[in-house]
Length: 235
Ligand code: 6PG
Image (cartoon, rainbow, N blue to C red; front, side, top):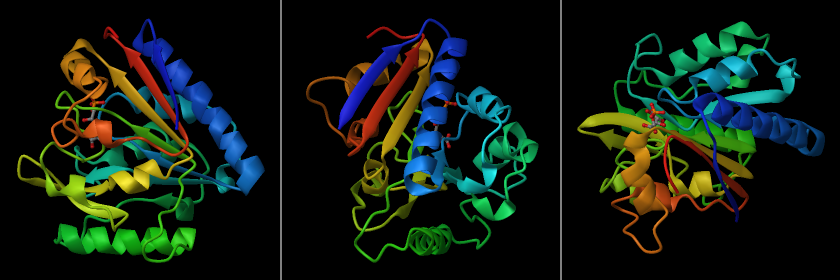
């Protein structure tokens, strides 16, 4: 793993830096592997990044968009990570609809939807049971409780090591999420963390020794590049 930590002076600078890395990684993936697979973070922080990517002139037919986690709501619900990314980015560019791979939330059964998305990823990447595909780029946020994606402290999702997708749980609310081993198989992972409310969690995630079950972002140790882009905190 190649870990880089950057403290930026403002949210705008953080987004500019994230855009630079994203564009470089997309180009690299397309030139080396003929396509780019990117998994998006939800929440608020990445929205301006998605709006910036939407202004770029990219080979959209070679870019496949996934989500690292999703609230278990309809795609038109205000909490939907899919809805946010479509409004900020995907509805604004000529990306083929078949290049957009949202996490399904319509079965009325999170486990069933998790299994079907797991199967979809295996089919797309042509990986067999027990193997984990390598996304070219995975974007992550971090909550004030040190969760990432929908891997929340002291939940069963943190222990899943034989699946790509599992059911996360936030205060009883189900979510679909990439598992830690799937995230860790990525060529490049970027954490976008902004705001003093993340300081306490960041201190524990960056500490020498701490409980990964209590601070799940510590689980993210990808085989490829790991970028922490920070602002509004001290390190
Ligand atoms: C989600 C996200 C989640 C988010 C963090 C940080 O579905 O909410 O995937 O992991 O990245 O909670 O959220 P903010 O960027 O809004 O602080």
